[in-house]
Image (cartoon, helix red, strand yellow):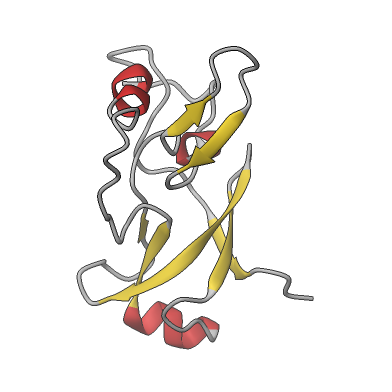
Length: 122
């Protein structure tokens, strides 16, 4: 997972992915919350928080949001471990390490309860 995502970008060929830094939200939910396309949102779970750009959509069911999986594809300096750049966000930081799937005994990567607010909202 993480190695493949990171190493795929060391070639210098960086493709365009419009969903890499977004949280996709149902159009009616966005309207009710005062969210418009492109707004910076704070996405918060019980264990983490991140920011993402709003992608308003009719493809997402009401009450749910969708984010690209993963750690955001960081490209690191191998000598210092400094992140040179990161595509996307670290969505897995929203997932609890203690809420495990009973069959696989790994963290549940889907169905994480989150709240969405406008970034810097008072």
